[in-house]
Image (cartoon, rainbow, N blue to C red; front, side, top):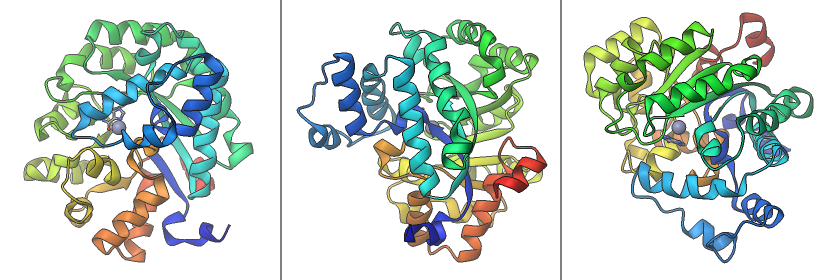
Length: 326
Ligand code: HPA
Ligand code: ZN
């Protein structure tokens, strides 16, 4: 594959990727047919035309609705394997994959079905695609803390397959503080901690995620630059931020890629990484995101190599694994 030598396809880790957000229209229709689910779209083109979003919530509405086609262990395995093949083709050597258990258990798909299916694909990925993996389960922040705690309980039999917990879905009005006890319980179980913060929400949510949830990495962190003291702290503590440039444009967190703060954040000394978030919806996988910001922000080869280096530094890999992956 000649494209394997594109600079944006250099070896990297992907650290902000919702597996449900890798559901391409073609697979959605195939799974709908297999599972007897009716989709309210005539065909894949009609579905793709619906991918015009005003904000995070307008995306989430479609994202959760389309999950109806995911029912069996095989569905989840197929979804994850398709992502891993696409990611590998764009230079991803290590992937830390989010999933949203509550979005499935709430519609009657057992927790175990989801994890067993995803784990089957993830655990075979090193051999099949040359990609090492981690699995991170996210709590839906617009659901209650009690629901999150019950989900953590459901995860207990599967903890050998789950590296950490995250926090996603509608941000504004659901500050990290709401999940303090859940994160304490997750830490007591030996789980790593990340959370979405500062995508649409204010910089104070980033502070809360650090101070109240003990996160080791911040997902998005896009609005950090609004708070210079926070930036200084993130730099000093080397807290990684998992930026998702194409997502930010599609969800209108930034007006255009040329206005994206990625380069300014690198210049400020922040440990930023480039990720794809929900690539089937936002127009690109990891390499596509890197290529797009390179073009829009005139990033140099050295900038791209630094971003790739950052991605391995920010990953939940031990030193030996990191050396092998890069
Ligand atoms: N933000 C919050 N929640 C999400 C996202 C996102 O970009 N993608 C999937 N769930
Ligand atoms: Zn996300």
